[in-house]
Length: 335
Ligand code: DC
Image (cartoon, rainbow, N blue to C red; front, top):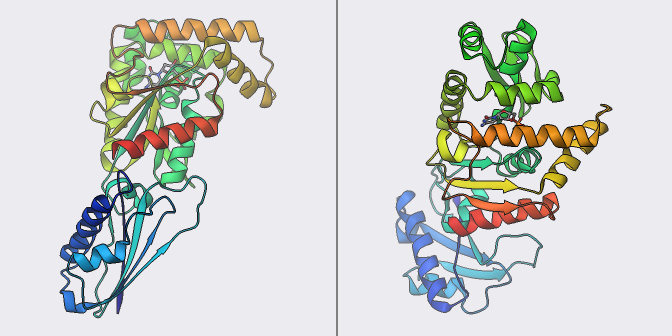
């Protein structure tokens, strides 16, 4: 015997929607698993507690699954669960490798079964993008690529080599011999210069400003963008940066632009640095962030900018859970 799983969502709780969604789901499970109707022993449905208007089991019978046993149950109301969702478990009288089918909004439940997708999150420093990107990556079991860390590593290499980061010719020379890579250990990004893991040296105010300056140069950007596209082309990932939605991945499946007031962003960075035991002056930090904003958004090539099709989220008065909830909701709406 084989057990096949599936799920789908409906747009609103109506008999018509349920009939159509169940017929589509069972039809796809049938075709992807090359099932014959008489091989289906039983079909068990569960639906979220916001579905009341029709039994999915009745929809299955109407769709022609008449000889197997059918059953529907309602799931408990769980905070944060996917809305208007119908799940199914099909017991089949043959031994096959099952192709589980997740459709519409339910694709999000089993990212491992669905196609590769990328999430682009852009925004200025302190807008909350890296925190939320990490949480999204964790929830969807996909990779998080911190593209800022790549520019920071270039800046660190330049500072160490005594290269003037404003001088594109000097920077270009340095870049030719630079072996920059990102590796992942237990899902955590480590940014490498050659064999050295430099992740711990990338967050200082000096490196932050130098990263912003060095990232103005087209030669630097093209080298970084090439690596970013290569990674994003191979697997599902969430990338955060300044130009992901506009330049690196203009066709990203989901695009967000996070922002927050300068005061709030400076406060977040201040708290982050002081929590690490670093001594920073709030006003100086605020000025540095403003200078970086100015430099990142006015550069000629791929500046910090919201893509026209990105969803804008002002995180000034939101908790990180609220930001995450908003992003996930928008993603579900789009699927
Ligand atoms: O996201 P971050 O603060 O770590 O980024 C550091 C700097 O790197 C930022 O001020 C501008 C640059 N950067 C960029 O130009 N493009 C990106 N995609 C990411 C970062």
